[in-house]
Structures are given as C-alpha cells and as structure tokens.
Length: 301
Image (cartoon, rainbow, N blue to C red):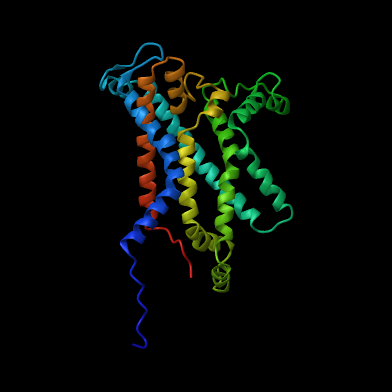
C-alpha cells in the first residue's frame, strides 16, 4: 500500500553466516595482535605471580606467598604513595597548562602554527633521551640551571627537591599532548553556540566556564584517563633522572617492578606488583567513566 515503509528483504542464513565469517576474517589480524600482545602477557604475569622464579632455577609454585609478601612490604607501599603523589602533582598542573595553551593557540594569534609544533615536540621524543638531557640540565656541577641561576642546587639528590623536579620534567614532556587534544576539542565546538552565548551577553570568562568547558567534557575524560594511566606507568624519565632515589623519594611503582624483576630477580613479586598496578588503574578508569558518564554531552545541535 502507498505510504507504508519498505521492509528490508530477509537474508538467508547462509548469507548471514558468510558475512559473519568475512567479518571475523577481517578482524583476525587485530584479534591475533590483542591475543599475543595483551591477553597472553597478562596471563603469563598472573601465572608468574604464583611462582618463585629467578630466571636460573626452575619456577616453583608458592601459592599466595608472593601476594602476602608484596602487600605487607613497606617498600612497595612507599612506591604506591610516591606514585600517587606524582599523580596529584602532575595531572592537575599539566591539564590546566594544556587547557590554557590550547585556549591561546586556537585564537589564531601570529605564530600559533609554529607554537603548536613546538609544544608537541617533547611528547614525540624518546622519554629516556629527554630524561638524560634533563639530568644534565639539573646537574649541580656544569648543569644549565646552575649556570643560569649562579647557585649550586642538588635538584635530583635532595630528598625534598627530587620529586618536584622529576614531576616538572614529566609535566613539560606531556603538556603538548594535553594541549593537542584540548585544541581539537575547542575547535570542534560549534561556532553558532559560542555566538549565541555572546549575543546573550556572556563575557570571555563566562563563555569559557559556562559554554566551552562543559562541552569539553568528552575531551577532558579522554585526557584524564590516558594521563592518569601514563603517570601511573611512569618509568623512563625516573630511571634516567634519579633511578628511584634519593631515599626512594621517586621510587614509583614501575621503577619498583623493574628493580624487583631485573635487579633482585624476583619475578614472582614483580608480577604481583604489576597486577596490583593493573587493578588500581582499572578501578580509577571505571571511577572516571562513572563520574563523566552523566555529565558529558557528545553532540550539540
């Protein structure tokens, strides 16, 4: 009859099976990569967490002994605390700086294109190489900061200054990454929404806090999730700058895992630490998702 919607022709079971096989065949390379480089390593780490193994003697099943040892170890507890301090210091500062820089770079000011490239350069460089360069900059003898300030300061060997100095390097490295995504988010905000707010009398401050920032929540969610994961897994710069010292003031969890595995050669304890780190990251990520889920708008008419 006229006016009735056309119904889609039914597909035969054989055609549906063929489409399913084709889809899985196209997904096979990705599924193979996930299985080999994600699922299998996790399973190996879980297996190692129940073993005592030092790379020389055969692995020996010890049950939950590794878990009891790690969870009651004050050194590992210190590493968790140090990592949390890094997160508390690094995440708010680099997020605020990245948002501020993105706000400036999206205004089309002279030199913005060049500055965008300069901001991203530290993030695309090798973290270990950057750590070595910054170790020379912080060096109390012959270092760049000593030459500029004219004062000898033990930036990386002073227990009070080591963590802030290392955190500053991490912020300097990652702020370009944060800026890049906030720029994309700001440029994606529909101009008619901004213009309507201006017509209604919104000033620059109100426009940012009432219009732009709420519409940036999807970008904020992505930036915070990836940044928190990156800081919790921080290793390269710490290894190059301080090696976890002085007095374990910069001994983050990833550095502690490396020490247990490749200096103490206790792979069972190292595996337990890796599992604890994974559980913490999953819990934080789920918490962030629950927080942003009802506060995020992905489409604007």
